Amino acid sequence: MIELFLLFSVVLNGLLIFYATRLARRMLIVGSNIDSVYEMISVFRMHVEQIHEAEMFYGDQTLQALIDHSKGILDSLDEYGDLMALVEIETEEEGDAEKEED
Image (cartoon, rainbow, N blue to C red; front, side):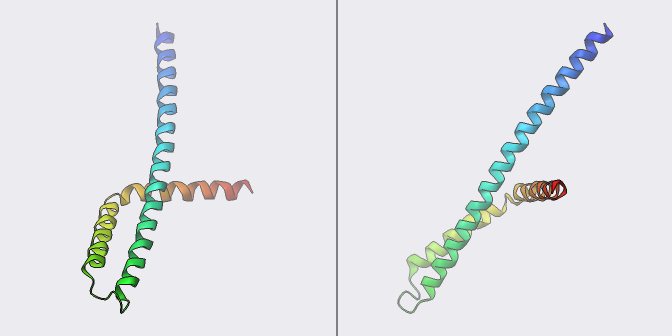
């Protein structure tokens, strides 16, 4: 009877480890995608600000609205900073493991 419980426990633990590994990989992908989107929006915001500061467009309300909107989006993405921090930690650990292999 004890062997049956032991076998059940080993199988269950194996399935949980498999599931946790798959879930961690998915989170890594999502986190890296969020980081890429954050960088693209940040570059877009800087570009719009440069255009807004040009003499021809200085004070344009439409460009100001674009700048404000991009700042709002970046603030929203900052709320997911903890997820990006997890990605950075995971990436650093993978980089350390690759250095040790070389």
